[in-house]
Length: 97
Figure (cartoon, rainbow, N blue to C red):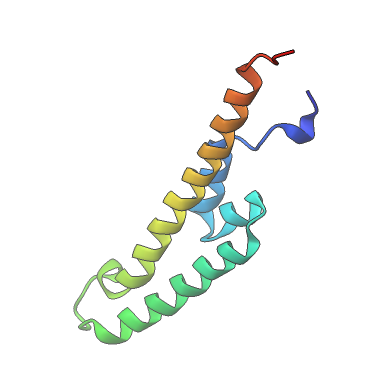
């Protein structure tokens, strides 16, 4: 089996997605989707910071961005896990003559 055929382990994608919003998607080859998540994390974080009261916590003030960040982490991990499990299933399936 070629090393190029083996997908990146989902935990590596998860770590990248946790460090920088959208990085997991970029590593998966879904750069447009990753940059979309990064953009909306920043935009909704800024919008919610303007709408929330000044005495709210940091997370509370930027809850829009935090929400999109969480969704992006889940989506990157889910996509990586699906690709990895499909590859594992395909590798375990015997070839029929």
